[in-house]
Image (cartoon, rainbow, N blue to C red; front, side, top):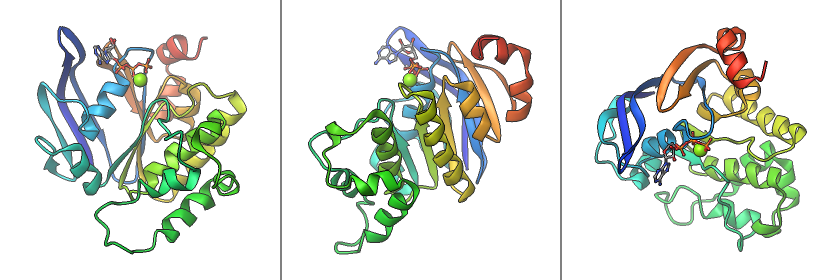
Length: 235
Ligand SMILES: Nc1ncnc2c1ncn2[C@@H]1O[C@H](COP(=O)(O)OP(=O)(O)OP(=O)(O)O)[C@@H](O)[C@H]1O
Ligand SMILES: [Mg+2]
């Protein structure tokens, strides 16, 4: 579904991705793990069209995304739940979801079905649907960020550190839903520092260090790999 080939991305003098290559197959959940500053967010932003690419190519369903604006990538089926959730603080839960509904859909088409799907995954959001964004807990905001991305009916869901800043128990809850979303057939690329959680739901994984992939393979294999354990699991 997604192929990144020899991607180089820089912020002025700072090169954030050095010829990165990665693939995500239809129906797969792929984890990209790496420490602070490894280039994880940069990669997701490059895929969703928020960050220009210096060289290399990104292909989605066998079409190059070069020159395709971010809004059009959403139409093609790419949706991102950004780092730090970026919930609209002054909108209610339901308004946060409603504004993200697929904008190309015909006026008047019911969004009730999409809302129900999100509420079914995250019943807590339904209970809080008239509550304002700013007043949600970190975990609820993360659920809302994922739910909001799902409102665009994506084929590929990009998740940027869904466990960030959450208590271990809440992070596990969020990942339980990520697993359910993956099992429903959606293709997922999740970036994380929390290796244990991400590799538990992923089929395959990549380890990113200073903008380069230093290791990749089946999630089970990466979990066993001594290097990953030492660098990211603290053992
Ligand atoms: N807007 C920017 N301007 C300049 N440098 C940037 C910018 N955004 C990121 N960088 C640099 O690019 C590199 C990769 O950053 P990126 O945010 O992609 O890392 P990350 O893996 O997402 O880290 P974290 O886990 O902290 O979110 C870092 O060295 C960072 O300082
Ligand atoms: Mg980041």
